Structure formats: structure tokens, C-alpha cells
Image (cartoon, rainbow, N blue to C red; front, top):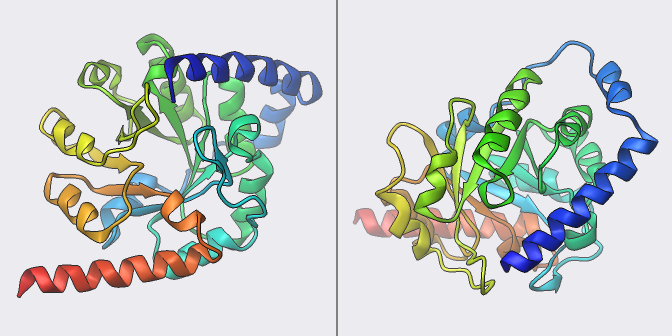
Amino acid sequence: MSKDILEEIIAHKRIEIAGQEKVVSAAFLEKQLGEPVPARSLKQALMASPTGIIAEFKRRSPSKGWIHQDADAGKIPAAYQQAGAAALSILTDEAYFGGTLKDIRTARPTTSLPILRKDFIISRYQLLQAKAVQADAVLLIASALTPQACLTLAKEAHTLGLETLLEIHTEAELDYLNEYIDVVGVNNRHLGTFHTDASHSLRLAEALPRGIVKISESGISSPDTLLQLREAGFDGFLIGETFMKTDEPGEALSRFIADLLTTELHRLK
């Protein structure tokens, strides 16, 4: 998305959060949480998975419009787990992506996989919301935050028992990394043109610090691309549209994993 659209989304998000806080206060959410419960670990799930696929539940995007308007959060995440996903990403931005926190609340009883709340997180209040609906990790987007805000939110997320995924697009944004970041993700979507190019992750791979769990996000539509990224050092692969644009996203993931295994076998011969 262009910087202008990102700024528009963040401005809208501030208004949205203020409205939500009037209805449900931060203090009320905190009372609901009680003692912090350890999250299902996104980081560990990626390291333990043979595929490393974070399957995404997404109804629409600002660039493509509706992808799967009537997508059912009570069925698709469970189907993703059955197909072999390592973890789930669920979009909770309503205005631009057609999702809500209710989607995580609906999905949670149907799956034991870690759930990433994917949204434009700019406030502690959103971390409280994420914990209240039993998400396990939150996305922190470098281009939507200052390094200090990123540090503050990541530290608070850990206090609440949430893991953190830092999304970067440029090498300069590696400055946002801090001790409270659990996973770093490279977004392959160009911020100015909407164009996705998975080779962007390949170009940044060398610059990423060793020892941290790395994922590649967006623009991954073939097993060949995933294997290339894995060879470059990526542990996880966030894939949404490839599956969500089909009638049965779970089946699409199942076919993708079958193709991935076949491709791997061919390469070994």
C-alpha cells in the first residue's frame, strides 16, 4: 500500500480505537484477562513445523477488494490446521480488510494452532484486545511505528504473554529490532505500488540477523518460491490470498503442501 494509504489507515485506526475504548474500557479488558496465560508460541510452532506455513484468514485487501467476502472464521482456520498449517494469521481490521476481533474469538475454539492478530497495532489497548480474544501473537509494522513505539508495544506484549512479529520492508527498518521481538517478517508487498515480489525477501535475507526466526510475507504462490526462500534462511511463510481466493481455502492449502512435498522429492533425486 502507498504511504498515503498507510497514513490514511493509521489515522482511521486512531479514531476507531478511541471509539472502541468508549464502549469497552482498557480497565474492563484488564479485569477480564486476570493472570497472564502463556501464549501458544508462534516462534516454536514455526521451528517445529515441516512446512512453516502461516495460513492467513483474510476477506479483502485495499488493493484487491473482496477476495472471499463470506469467509467463515468458524470453519476455515480449522480446515487450515487439518491441512497442515503451522500457525494462523487472522486479519482484524474491518474498514480495509473486512475482518474483526470476533473472527479470532470464533476461530479460537476450533483450533489449537497459534493465532497471530494481524492489524495495524499502534496502541496498548489493541494488545489488551488481542489477549482478550485469545490471540497468541501480534503484528508490529515498522512503517506504522517509531522505533520507540515499537519497543514499548513489544515489551508490553511480552508482559501480557503475547509474542511479537516485527514486519519490515527495508534493510533500514532492521533498526526496529529489539529484545522483545520474537519473529521478524519481510513484507514482499511494495509500499508504493502494491506490487508483490517474493524475491524482495531473497534480497533482504543476507541482511537479517542470524539466530532470529524469519518469515517471508505476501506474494508466495508456488512451492518453488517457498523452497527458494527456505534455502535463503527463512523459517516461515505467511500465505493468504493464494488460499483465500479459492472456494475451499483449507483444501487449497492441502494441495499446496502436497505439491511442496512432491517438489522437494524431485529436488532430492
